[in-house]
Length: 371
Image (cartoon, rainbow, N blue to C red; front, side):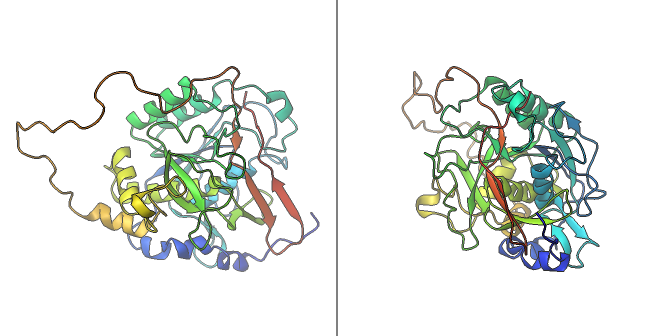
């Protein structure tokens, strides 16, 4: 784009989310050591200075398209990995991107193509089960947290039985599953999958004032919100960009889940979700909303809450709880019946701007396939 890269020390100043989430305070407890976060995405540049030494050998379930060194390889995945576990250059000296859990490990699993990948046309309309396979592979290879900054929020999006089963498999194996809620706030707020699968922590996006980002999807499945506007992201080209999207928001929550798992390794996925929800700030009226879920993720309060003794909720032995609700029987499904055709996954819609440069590069929302 003909622009010089931003100075590294200028990058850290622009990472407003570090202050908004009070991460310096959270890091007094843990930086995520001992935790593995699987990033299911377009690939991760293990040689990036901000990620060097933190990326484990991964898996490519796409099998074609851009390769290492191509401009359309691993851009989105590297950006998300940096938000989760970036450690900067020199680790704390003000250079490069710092992530939420800079001592966590990244397990890269390539399940989608970049929007601009020339091979994307070959994959249009193809599904092939790469996402479901990737979730299972990550769960089987030590993932404590699975980050899914991707999804299908098109008008024809519908649940896939294989993906739903894969999510349930990962949860049963002890992996926390986090996904972006979707970027369809201006396009009908269509449900996005995998965010809408049961058990997934679905994340919407807020700006630096804590307000809902206009593009962020509003749906019943929203669990939490996190920064998703003007987020500093690392790129394989060794430059830094400013991005937006619920993709970034999901990565911030995955990093927070990694902090919880590092401080309290025995937490089950449901307990991690409960702690994140119970500790959220900027709680909407009534306790939740489709825009923000339970509120904005708060790593400091989540860690503090996890350290407190759990209340005794066992109740008297032999006393059955009262039953409230419509009772057993037929009820309307929470998700639509699958329609004809198959949705195609894409990295969450994100716009990126080269920091301190005039040029603009867009990651347009579109349908990106996987074989």
